[in-house]
Amino acid sequence: MSALALEPLLGDGFQAVATLDDTRLSVAFSGSGDMRAITLLADYLTQVHEEALRHAVSEVRCDFRKLVFMNSSCFKSFVVWIDTLKGAPDAYKIAFLTDPNLHWQRRSLEALRRLAMNIVSIATDAVD
Amino acid sequence: MTLPLGDGARVSLTLLFEPLVEQITSLRSAMSDLCAPHVTDADELSRLLLAAHELLENIVKYSSGGMAEFHFALEPGERGLCARLRTKNRALPERLIDTRQRLDALAAAQDKLAHYDAMIRESAGRRDGSGLGLARILAESEMDLRYSIDRNTLTITAEITVSERAEP
Image (cartoon, rainbow over all chains, first blue to last red; front, side, top):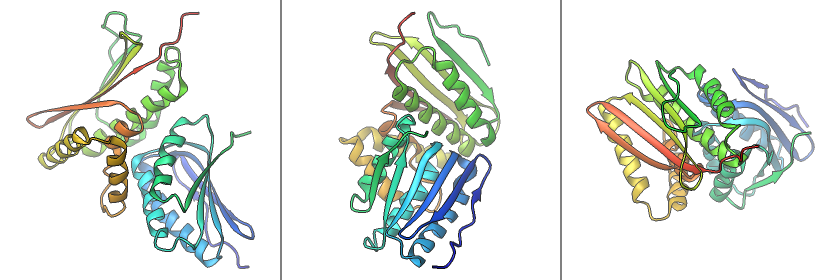
């Protein structure tokens, strides 16, 4: 398997770091996704999608446990990503890993899950 | 920043400022600190902070210059604490029209969640912005929204009743 061509996203107060194993691409998000992160995130998710296809993973896991907030524009970047994937639902699934103590995550991610219930799943696990 | 004037208000904060994006996270954090001693439910606090963040970003994005106002208050109500967020800013005519259309559509929607889901689907094709900030306040924060327009000044108010922490 070739290496993951996905540099860490190191924005001002917002970060994302991707790792790859045999069947899964995992992206750990941290910080606060606000106005300063919008363009960075949109571009990054495009790259995540391309890498997920290139490596033929079965799942992309988005670890939100250290993501303290996400604004509506960053939320939209996930909508666009999921909408892209709806055209190829067998390509891979998206699994969000959340922290139950970050209450906004449940509400926002449930809205994403309703967008594509056959693609998006949500799991909960508090940060150690 | 002014000190509380309302009778029995737990928190009352009015900020007049030239809004900048780098101020929003620290304002949200300050609001969290101000509310934490009074708001019992962590989910309710999270919803308030989400709404505050979206309203603050709106005035950063859409103010047409000059000072903007951000007001937040927690006041005793009949069933708990009334939490009120209010922004006031000057905006361009096209922004005022767009906001009026959005908020009127939100108010008219019979099923708020279905309307929100439809807006989310539509947002995927939008080139500029998400168009979801105000809808998110209604659907995710579950706050009542109202607005007024006075010439070129837009005022948006979000309100909800939250649980008050019992006195020790």
